Length: 421
Image (cartoon, rainbow, N blue to C red; front, top):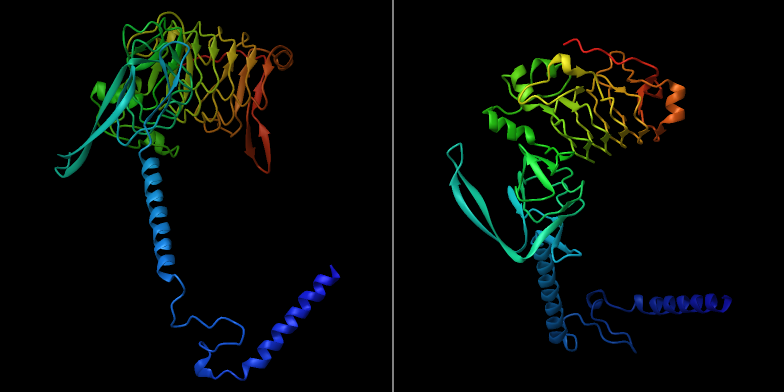
């Protein structure tokens, strides 16, 4: 190591000596052209050897680089909208749909082999010309789609309607998570596994509710002839929220922002009501399971009550057939089930519930709590709840009050509240 340091120091001294010897001898007007003995002459004003070839190679490299950049950018922007996998049968599994632009409706029956777009100019509602894109899909009739995979349509913000063909026999519960524009499903009547009821997706015998589309209220506004969009009302302006329709009426809320789960349903599936624009949900007595994130982030949900008997058509159940909060038949509440349902007014957990998942009520009940302390009422005593119910981590959630976070208060051994109106 010492030898290398000495050698480096000697070289530095030699370089300095050369500099000192020549710095005063070089005329200022020849500084850029002066040649030092034993070194190559400067190339100022003189061509390099093979300079033309080198320039040509440099230009060629730049052209190839730019071409490759454009090619891969084009490939990224024009990725195949459909990604399929193979199944154990001869069918195809839809793994991922990437909306090519403005596609609003899609039929899932056969694998798509080609997508063509036609852009035309039409007159908009304001009388001005707007561009319209139509899509023509070419199906491969030799590859029926038999399954729709996990997160296949995740976060699509354009698709409004999905039609499901007769051959689809498997749909992952998380296939339609965060499809914010989705307003309705249409299932082929010949499908042996699935059906829809007024745009909501169920299994065939309607014992499992699979997906209530996030924008189903748009479907209902169109169905009942409500055309006004997102107008605040006095009731919701006080809470800092917006509510649909400036001519808000109880009839409107009953038709558009209320959902009565059919009496046949035993399970509400994972993510079934994620981000739904609902203010009231009525569950049937006989419901057994609320799966993971079943009512995840229903920001406006105020009431989640139970009805007995047969579900009435097109109207809220009679008061005599209603009881506050969850059904006695319920046994399971999944993780994040009511997460961030801030407007929820009241929760009563019946005695038959044996498992509550983690963060099941995280952030719920906060806005509706008069003193800022969310309360959850349980039929079991506090000791019985801990001894007989599997409780997930932070199942009741926390809230900030003052300097320290506190868990929601659990009132054990409580009686179910009465519904007054």
